[in-house]
Amino acid sequence: MPAPATRVPPPRQRLGYRPALDGIRALSIVAVIVFHTPGWGSLPRVLPGGHLGVTVFFVLSGYLITTLLLGELRRTGDVDLPAFYLRRAARLLPGLLVVSVLHTVFWSSLDGVLKTLLPVLAALLYLGSVFAGFWGLMGKITWSWSLSVEEHFYFGWPPLLRRLFRSGGRCRHPMRLAALAALAVVGIAVAVRVTFVDSVRWHDMLYFSTFTRMDALAVGCLAALAAWRYRLPFARCAGWLAAGTLLYCCVSPELSIGHASLNTWGLPLGTGAAAVLVVSVVQRPDALLARLLAVRPLVHVGVVSYGLYLWNLFPGSAVQHLTGHRVGPVGTVLCWLAMLAAVELSYWLVERPVQTWARARLRDPRPVRAPRGEVPASECTRQVLARTASWRVPVVVR
Image (tube, rainbow, N blue to C red; front, side):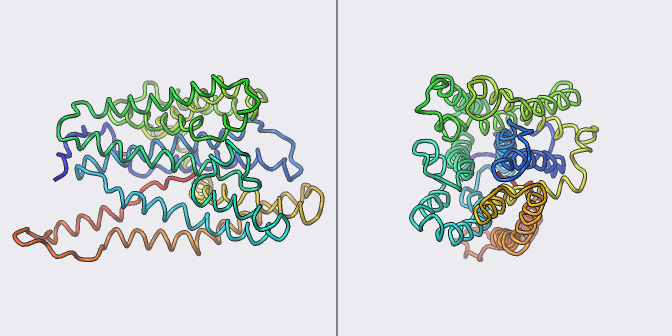
């Protein structure tokens, strides 16, 4: 039997659906796209720190996952780990498979099958952060490193929370121990980055590896644990200050990839600002900042932001290779439109149907005959489970 659900204290505020979080996703993916475009397009490098959009995604992911897990623990006293990983697979794998197939078909005829297929297999097995960080072998699919960092973290964090809260009373302060575990992750990542900040040999490891980038996910988890019981002081002002700090980080040349300042203070600054921004818009959904982030165009871009991350490099790189020169301003716009079209098609024709199937699978599992002497679930219980399974849950993406 699971431990009593009351071991998780009541939340200060129910999360629900916050469209402003999709707005944060939208601005983050725009920063990443603008950061990547000068590599194949004609845009100047106006956002040298735009790669920090990935850090914002990490923080947001850690916050949402932890909040949802705490909610499940409070409702049921347990975490359904198979259901958790099924939801993640249904959300992440379909789009990744589509991009991987197209990437393999297009580039294998130009770069060779082995050189193309090895990075794709590493990405599908969520080993991109290892191959990119230690061997630099991911080539044109190096962007998959961030997917690996997230999955490596989530192989450990949900089981850890489950164990802490289901320890049968042996663990007296599970919330505190969870926070200490997240702080340990932050400490390890920061210590490794500071130790090797001047190392040329480990340059790629500092940016790409799980050990040096998982602190952003852990900070998101810490923010969720704190916000579960406490309010952010001066949340409205703090949100604007955090947004301004993130803007500064994105435009600052000092925080370009490869600069020592990125590893010493840039990543911690961007990570902390992202956590404050997320908590601010969640706890103050009526504030001007949250309402601006919740406008419909931004929300839709946030909904498909995972697909934008998967597709943002392919059209421009392919056109540049085929033509032999940069695509120019008009070509850049056309590549963006092609990217948007591919993302929408993938989302509506592949990703959404798979997610619908996964939700139906979780909502209506095959009936299991109750053991002799055990009372089967009542119709009322089945209705409650059906309703809770259909609630709109914030989708966690890269």
